[in-house]
Image (tube, rainbow, N blue to C red; front, side, top):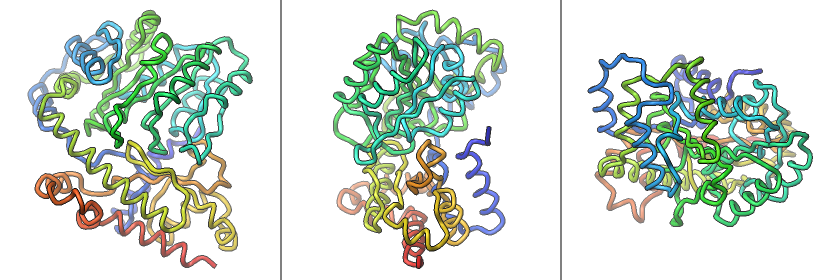
Length: 417
């Protein structure tokens, strides 16, 4: 096993910035914005609560979370089928521990899914996703992977909006995946941690609406509610898996015991999603969209292949068009490319192989959040009326590392032999 690539690059860039400064940090995906003020106020209010709470989670939080996912996304939600954990990452790991079966993953997919499966001794089956299709998991390819599996039950993780590509699955795509899941007895873990951050006009659709009997949903505070360091996630099990809740509660009781009491109280306010929280989320998502589209235009104009992001705060471009030039410069794999860009240009990216993509594809993940979120949010609220037709100008002015990173990447490509 290796250290998580996302955390490793963040630590490396943080140390380099402290020593030298000047690094453009496209390597780590963390919401740059402050948590909603009402959430912070509740955290302060309950800072003195040092009790052990129930391992399944604070009842008031489970009720608030159930109401949130039911009202916001139409899920069949019951507080008794919700489990609270220290981030959705931990809840996904606990689910994989509790469930039997091979783990089928699209490539690319988030860096921790595969290692979690390996830690638990599961066979991990990768499904290559087509760049021209936005790297979405294709139902026919899932069908082929299921036929390769040797276990009666299978598990797949569907992340929409997706890290690292920004893809959002359509209703028709999810309907086809649901058909295959029923045919091959596949349990779907729907990782919806970026669910609040979508850019399209169509209402978000969860596979839990189309395949409710075999879909487990996870989400949390980290991304849409701008509270990654709070480490709070929730899991919603379907009515057909009520026993899973008891199993996960047992696992919690023997591992992390419970999530911090003050954080759980603060999360109640987030999932209530009152007017102030809704406005906070709306404004931050608008900025994410501007930043993502600005960078997408920039990387495509310099000749990189990159699906247009539909949510989250990532791009997944590849340098395959420059493969010959890169080889002449001694760069043959994505890890070499990322190391070269960091050393020569001070631009931090993550190699595609960390997400399960072959190194020779020269793909990288680019996080779009290297700016002062508090300052940018204040500027956006002050200048909102101007940004309708001047989105690019707003990003260039208030998020200077984004155009600087593009400039350095283009300079790097221009310098190739």
